[in-house]
Figure 1 (cartoon, chains in turn brown, blue):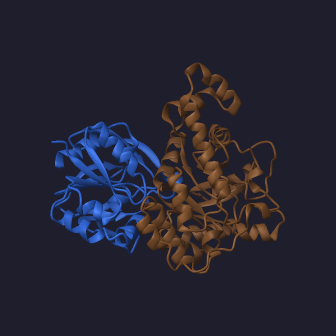
Figure 2: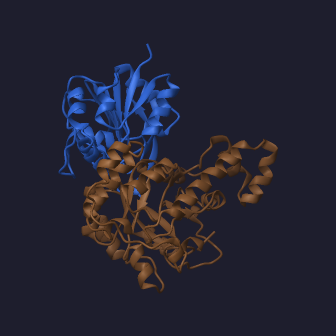
Figure 3: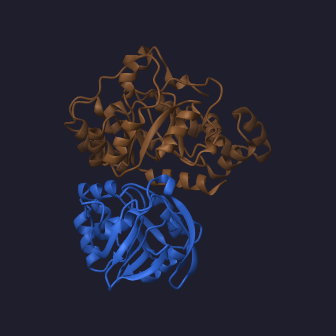
Length: 290
Length: 189
């Protein structure tokens, strides 16, 4: 692996134990930074609004992303459509710190993801299961996140993905060496990656939770299930008191195992985002990409 | 007796430091709240890499700040890496915040730019020789008082230094399998 790929995995390591927040303006980015976000995701519309508006959603205006880069000192991430390598070239040209090849935008390609190994900037990708996570890593992703349903405020999918990935990791660890070839074939991943997971008991890159996190308790739940940090999208700026909720989620992630602190944090947060239940969703974004 | 080193664990790459310490046969405990500091004896503390804005804020909100700062002023050995260097710096040129502010250095945040400016290098480190250095959106030390000993420089910028019980690196020794920088710190403990 190249030096660049190592450096990109290293940046994800520095984000661990932190909260990455969706922001749509420089002003929101400042609020997020002051609330303790370890990075921000710059996008034109937050997922809940994308869901409501419908239509094709694309990479954000580079000018808007630049205004956020100028407003904060923490890393700035932005999203491209699955398979849209030109949007990724554009984000690399404006020196983005991390690209999210995201199912939240309309996919540009229904077969091929971006060959991320061709880029110098790092990529994070979503995964519902271990095979998907390792396929994205083969393509050059240096960070993985769950593919919880964005813009819903419903945590069920993120929980399902995190549990499944960790169950599958434990399953690989239980196998004899001569059983690993077949397991790699079933997962549709290389033997080398399956071998790494079997030996180390974890993904070769950092794994965050994303999608549907709306409360400090949601964030702590994902951390206790094995997430190394969380992305929060609509949950903050669609709530009654974004600043206070953002601060509470940051503290919940760093004290995810301490119910006493979590109880204090959960008080008086104002209204959470209303949200939509899984069964009420017409469009399941997690099914984009595999 | 085995030494015990606290690792500030409110955000960032604290687990990596614990791994390095374990390889050196040193105990480590995660410091997440004030009681972790007051209920345990520690021989030194590591402030890891991560985001200094996050850690600086959480130090206050989790009520760690005063006790930690007092301990350092009274001589608790401390190693700050990357964001940890920022937390210890008395002055940060491109940031109006000062966090613990106990070390007489002037630091520059994100001194090499964004992630595309992150790099690896091998550099001379005082009394050790060449060590691998990984810089991730790293700071450097723009200037230091006379009472600060420079330990390493890359391209004429100070990237490691020591003042009494305090040691800082702008790179990440915990990301490499080379343990010499941690060993150097443990000699101060």
